[in-house]
Length: 307
Ligand code: AMP
Ligand code: MG
Ligand code: MG
Image (cartoon, rainbow, N blue to C red):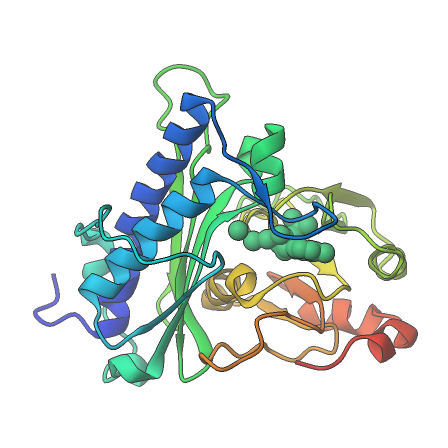
């Protein structure tokens, strides 16, 4: 272990352990069978379950206890509950050398964006591998590190296969926990929403002339497909995603040389006063990001404000 891990390294190390704990909570609630669904909007397109509530309580309380002075913003609007605090670390993360530009970060410069269950709709419908836990670390508004935990990785792999996995990254260090197998074979595979589609989303995908379109749940899950080389780009020309959906994915993609931006090619910012909605949509890719931005029709760009 480095003698004095920096704040950013300690935050990502803690986030790995905390997201693992949140993943167990999510699995336990599904196993117990009562999801406790409530709807956050009148159209019932934005459900919240007991897993969202309990996982967020665990993540926010653990980060607040361990990192006083750091701002933590979670998706769910909940009272503080200190009954589920995770104090473990990831020894693997603690070993890394912090990049010089992140060595002296102070707590007041940090804002952490938490999506306790990304892909809640899919969780309630049994598409369990679409579910992720997202913890994104931003410094002075820039997404610099984070964790994507997939609680149901291997859930169909049979007995003995380890359940769940955690990908983590720090910009300037790298992205760890999944292998880029590049199974695309030269094809252009676009991944997009399966439950929040609009005409503009479809028109933008059509303009990319894809060989294949994968409609799956969750921003975290779609970015995982990019990290693993199973999709070429994540395209969503609509304002539905929020900062907690994109902070960790943006940091992980960036840490392996990829990019997540709005449809104009602008990076999103993540300081604590920023608007929660990503009004400019999402264009993300592990490589050739500029190509996808260049293919967004001008009429769509005109509808969506820049980040
Ligand atoms: P999706 O790709 O549809 O699974 O969405 C990725 C993330 O953005 C999830 O956390 C969704 O809840 C959120 N999201 C996207 N579009 C909308 C929308 N129209 N209303 C509410 N949440 C949305
Ligand atoms: Mg989400
Ligand atoms: Mg969520």
